[in-house]
Length: 285
Ligand SMILES: *[C@@H]1O[C@H](CO)[C@@H](O)[C@H](O)[C@H]1NC(C)=O
Ligand SMILES: *[C@@H]1O[C@H](CO)[C@@H](O)[C@H](O)[C@H]1NC(C)=O
Ligand SMILES: *[C@@H]1O[C@H](CO)[C@@H](O)[C@H](O)[C@H]1NC(C)=O
Image (cartoon, rainbow, N blue to C red):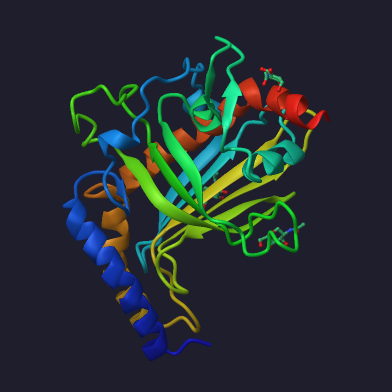
């Protein structure tokens, strides 16, 4: 069990990193903890958009803020995603988001990540391979992915755009550690920070005749570790207010959480347009 002091030390180290990043970002709207998006991150062209069904694709969703710690919890229950199975979702996240594909609509070649969400996505790359991959072929557990994307961008930004016209958009530009990927879901957390991670994320899935049943959950904020006390909760709350919430969503973290919910609904519902065919083409299954 972590005592208040040792827990406090871990928190302070994590927060020193966060504080630097938050300061660098100037606390503007919608930063999800890391450096800004630069022109070099943008593509020269983008694939055609899908029809984004956003909140219409939600069975239900929720944003709740814990009054003791100000931790934000977003829960999104998606409507079943037609034609997509848990096996396809596992295959997709097991190294197959990276690379190119032929677009089923215009026949051109694009990064798969862009096909997945044509308006918002910039890139996803493996920064650190899974240490387990040597013994468990294809494993991504404990791998680190760099994920760079807009969160509900107001337009399709390209490299040719005037520099930084996107600076008011919400975005993610983070190193995300994969905790686990298996037939029940994908579990991730922010790579920075020690044992008390300021952002945790999971997608829980199962099969149904109507398609993939999916619940997505995002937690923003440090948590009380070990035995709960009001004093620990107050400390965590002040760190969450000063750093985690600000780094996630500037002056409007709950508003940014709502944008994240919409982005998440869009990107997962987009899968039905390309993933079953791509999976079949490549795996033959
Ligand atoms: C929203 O909040 C309620 C009450 O806390 C909870 O019962 C429900 O499962 C939550 N999630 C969704 C997606 O509605
Ligand atoms: C999948 O991973 C999660 C998170 O580590 C774990 O709790 C769960 O038991 C795993 N399920 C299976 C079937 O391996
Ligand atoms: C399927 O694979 C073939 C051969 O690799 C490729 O030429 C074709 O464009 C692929 N189609 C799709 C929809 O991915």
